[in-house]
Length: 343
Image (tube, rainbow, N blue to C red; front, top):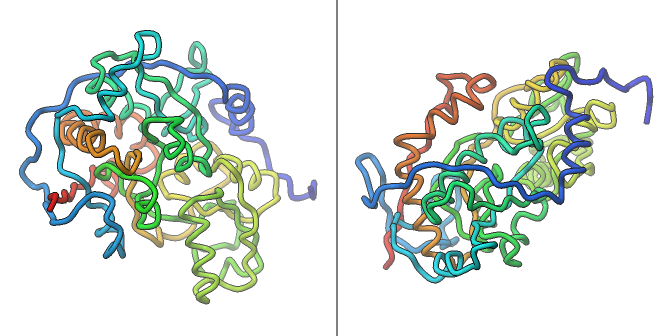
């Protein structure tokens, strides 16, 4: 490492580096946290759009609006939910893959007893678990790296992943998604002193970090191949977890980070020497990911989201994200769902 490029350590609630160490030590822990309220039986509400098709149909999935379509909500149990409920009392929990080092989304707060998991995604998990099992403590959280989100679902290590996971056409070939619960877009994060101005020619001859398996890395790779990104931009640095990119940036090992703007804003809140550069250059939606054939679970989560959008989502946003994303930004309201009807 070039020591002359090393950047100042973080300030604030303990610093990203400190949190990264804590996260590494805590990786094997499963933490139970409370959740609240049940969702209504009403499958659809005013203002919700309906389309024709079937869940996880990737043909015709060409943009953010097309692939956000999902199964209509239902409160009925099915084989997936029955299997979850049939677990023994000691293991009768919803197993959820989450992040534990994304500040304000899913992170272990070192200022709480036992470094409790907190954040916007964690609040949603509480709500889902309460609806399915009726027990605010019936959750087993598993820390899943960005690159292992899909394999964790396919291998059955988790029932679902709630981890700032963007709904994409490619991912719909492998897993099923709920209705979207958050809207964001890719942005560039760099030091305030950097000449980088955004996702443009200022990235020429710059080294950019992304998380392995992320939509950010796929976008950069496609754009460089198509000539929409300077050929000299070095995108070879990938890491298992997004927070590792910020650490690389702090150490001067990379010049910029590309990630979801919502995550980048939280990282900028941790380190006052970095900032978002330019506007978001994609439109993306986060969804809850589940096994492709878990239709009953998808419908149940969508029913939970119907009520959560009406009561709960805004409170969680104000608690965790308004300080970095603003109270009146495009991200400050939940995206409307688009439901498919089974043919």
